[in-house]
Length: 411
Ligand SMILES: *Cc1c(COP(=O)(O)O)cnc(C)c1O
Image (cartoon, protein in one colour):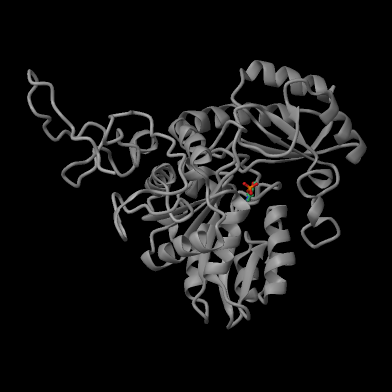
């Protein structure tokens, strides 16, 4: 099949190349640190044939070839590549100041691909003592039987990280801030440790809690950034997704190869929903941070509340490092409840705006008890979380309503 010829109405001059929404001369119409502009425009030029401003959902599995092996735009099958997914991948690369992104069907699919691409059986990796539960399960139950070994370390303690290095250590897996205890690791220091390791290790940073708006791990020396785009990047609790971004061409090629070979790629509609979220990431994150700061103030003054975990608090052990490597401190807050788990469960059942549920990073506020919900899989392990811990994902509702709701639940 051939394209119908594009004709110009006779009374109109032939179209001139324009750079509306897209570079034509190889330069970008945004500054390197123009985050909000990149979020809306990078990878999202108006569609060539129709000028559609919103990236179309290319809901197709396959693509017509003009001759055997000759494709129109490099696409031959949507597991290997799809234009809607490409748009998301280019946007995420721009936001992280990387060069290559692979978008996956979930954060865990991205994590799995990262482990397979960066490790071989026999290798060793270092993981955070308070890693996301699903990450811990993937490594402990899937990667270990595959043949790798790991050491769980508090990543805020660089001495402990150094002590855990072995000749076969090939990867440091970092989360900062961590889920659910908001621990902070020094990304630049970990990059130095990884790159100076006897076996030459890589540093991967799970940037899900901070997002590229608050923290740019590649700029700090990390080799790979992982996202559960399900959270802040999607931002509306309506899609599951994940991504891997790198500035290294060889690693980028490995990720694309693993995505295509293992097949856990993001579908066109999921990519489109995620891309729609990306556009408002900067404004949403600022509101998440504004609201979280006020919620933290309320919590620290409440007699029912024990320790409050928020990297913006000066007494937080990682505060200095967080202040150096983050733009702001994020929308996630955890706290311990005087009265134990029973009381924590009661508080979660009393909120009316904070919805009791897993996940985080959406526009709506969520509340949960990690030990009984998101972090069940680490019960009994060295990664176990306090039983009386409550984690909240502070949404972007009116702050007064959120304050009233939480204060009432704590009363
Ligand atoms: C949710 C989450 C993941 C897993 O992502 P999914 O999209 O749920 O598969 C990984 N890391 C962190 C920090 C998360 O919060």
